[in-house]
Length: 207
Length: 207
DNA sequence: CGCGTCTGTGTTCACTTGAACACTATGACC
DNA sequence: GGTCATAGTGTTCAAGTGAACACAGACGCG
Image 1 (tube, rainbow over the protein chains, first blue to last red):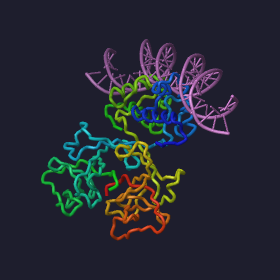
Image 2 (image 1 turned 60 degrees about the vertical axis):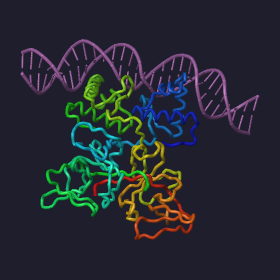
Image 3 (image 1 turned 180 degrees about the vertical axis):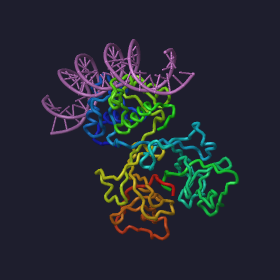
Image 4 (image 1 turned 90 degrees about the vertical axis):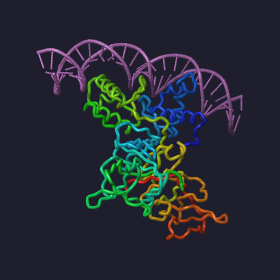
């Protein structure tokens, strides 16, 4: 995370390896695994690098525990939700079968205001039909499958394509409205398939 | 993450504890730590619960490695950036000193399109001055400290308060423009302190 | 040169931890 | 009552692992 300037080149290498190993395998490496990676003949050299890293605050350790190295910025309780990003056309998404996802986005559950075990999915927004809700092309919208309430923004399956619209009720009948006056209301002829209700949005880039 | 219905009550308890332990300490618990938590007298009972969980796909293991339990949904290579969220007034933020942050948001670095060790911070947007860029009150804007380029959206320090504006150049002179015609351009009288350039945005809630 | 820091070697020890086996108890189901 | 899956006990073993010590080479610095 941090390029601490007070680290020696070797210490930085070790730190990078530890972080990389955690990313790849999910657990921190043992001293001997680090040793093997650098081709060292003794675990003690590694141990002092690790000690130095801890001394300098670049690493944190659960003393005595195996594989107890972790980021100093470790924040307890921050559960992650892993959100699959489907394309713009997630036809048949509500099935239980695992859909092929383009990407995954990991976000802190607390930041999104959802439970840690929330089942979310995401769609990339295409078009400008929700511009009135300040949702633009390229935005990634997080959705959760649940019953929509009036004024919720929902992803609905219409003609085999998924679109983002606001969910409204009029005289007990549900219909969808774009947040753009150039689009007409969508009054479902048959049935309305709601795939999910928007719970958040992620935009990347500055423009 | 998943409430697998085929798990027995005890197995679910063990699974929950493993996940909770990972969240709190950052590493997965050893069999004996699980044993101690449930007040069992033998590590072997735990071992078979864990075996069953792996069998049912609710857990994944690095065989033979200490503390090698992890989520089956583990996605290698997803480095996280831990983003401190300052308030609406991060006065003097560019200092090296660690500022008190209200919250932290963890996001997948790849999803944000930034390097894994990017130094980001976040601000909660107040006001409607950037409505034209579809950034509204309550949005959380991710920023990185770097030199702004024309058309970048930046957080600038004006009169001790941080505001979000678009960065522009005219005849070599920098000035700031709100994306809302009701706000005038800001032409810096003295110097322009740019705290960061916007690289992303997170919105929570549906409205 | 002498000093200190960083780096690496070879080795030893004790604790941690996963893996395994035989046996018992409980409850569901036929 | 018999059978089976789930759950738990007591124990043993070997591998994984952190921690430690003495010693040596490389390098910068005064």
